[in-house]
Image 1: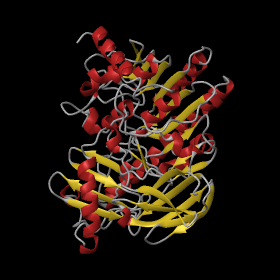
Image 2: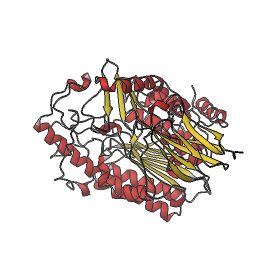
Image 3: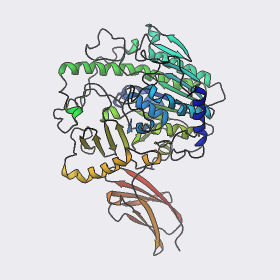
Image 4: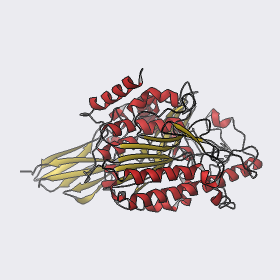
Length: 554
């Protein structure tokens, strides 16, 4: 396929869906189309955010903090492909970091139909700074993927070198050395800040993607690095800042009994004390490597503010996946479904987003593209599996009630606010109740008392693992009914999933009017016309908002 034909097909996809955007509820209008800045780190845990005050205050404090955000496939390349496509991995097809199942070449033809292509076709200036998909640059080092007006990315195999790497700068290869100013995090920040200053002088909105390598392991190795464990390379000014920091040891750390875990965990011996010491060094250096990223976020916010663009910029901060540091006998790594790898930081600020809000609903990285095209008023070229997060932050008392899918070729998991149920390719099963075991230490899949829960989750997982578009966002099967009786409205929540209801909170004409805590979940309301809102809570932790406009009763 020629490059011209590929671009034409990509633009045709955008035009074909202009009248059928599949992203969920639209956000409130803003004065003009906002700029979009996305900062993505590599392998960052949610726990590590405690050392990043600039992100927490300048993004989260001035916007929204999502405390339950997840990567659907906790691995670099599939996760980044999800960001670019707005789809779960089973739909975009990137199922690993390397060929034949994954890597840059797996998505290469699809680059004509990704987020930057959609934004650029609608008038956005698009710039990418930092790492891209695994394997990028190996075959065609000077290639710039479709959709980008400007491009500054390290090429493999130098991507994970904090010093001594090569960038493709708009088709020209530029090598960087070992001077402190060449530290890749700082170079990424400098180029991103320069892009903001230049783009802000134009009349078009811009999309800036900033992808830091930190805190991923990298080279060069340093004299004090542990012999058997790779570590990142903090900026020289930050080295040793956390030399005395203790490695967190939650109940899941180096589990004593893993008989209830899948084979991939059962095969691991307990982590030795020598390895624990090496893990602790890795952990300390990861925290230190994030300090330059935190400074970079401050510099970007400052540049946006000085250019007069901060108020009209949607700023997103997240990571592609988390990382293990000895939890569940996993010395170092990701991919598996447990909290440490699947949970990722997510912060948003921008037009119409209230300041300092905390969103507790489960969200997932398939929502990022949907959120961006919603804010930009752009039609996606694909059927998106996620939903825009903007309505969640603007109407915080509205709940989706959907399930979240975590899936790789080796397992499929369904997550609700209370439970996580997992089916492994080799036949193992897991079930966790976060209400009693937030660390996922004891699987309950074989407990008779959880048989009904397991059956319900297994049935929903079967549908979810092959979902596409709106089918990936479905919530409980419930409906809000109303009838007039004895001069009043009788509102009731019914439906196939009503047996799982634990409570319903009622709102009528914008005022809270009580709750129902047992069946039948109904409420007697005044006879006047108005809007009835029922927020239904289910025993698996999901909450869903139902709404109905009623006429006055005679």
